[in-house]
Length: 93
Image (cartoon, rainbow, N blue to C red):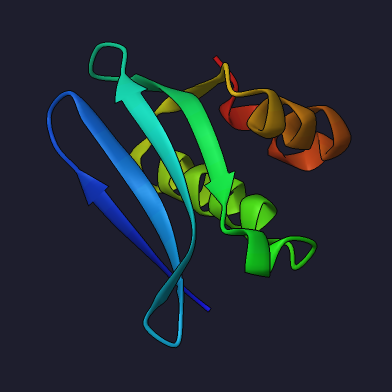
C-alpha cells in the first residue's frame, strides 16, 4: 500500500492507494505554521478492517515528526488512534 501526501498552504490530505485504487483518505487543515488539524478520515468499504485508517494516521505522525509540527486530531477516528497508541502522542498539540 502506498501513502501519498498532497499539501498546500491551507489544507492537505494523505491518500492510501492499493493497485491504483483509493483505499482511504485523511484530510487536514493547517492551524498556523506549526500545527495541523486532522478533520476527517474515510476508508473505502472494500478496504474496511485492513488497517488503512491507522496507516494514514501514522503517515501524518511521521510527517509531523519530520517537520517539527504538531497535530490536533478532531476527527473521531484519528483521536481514537492517539488514545490507543501512547508512543505517538509526542506530536499532539
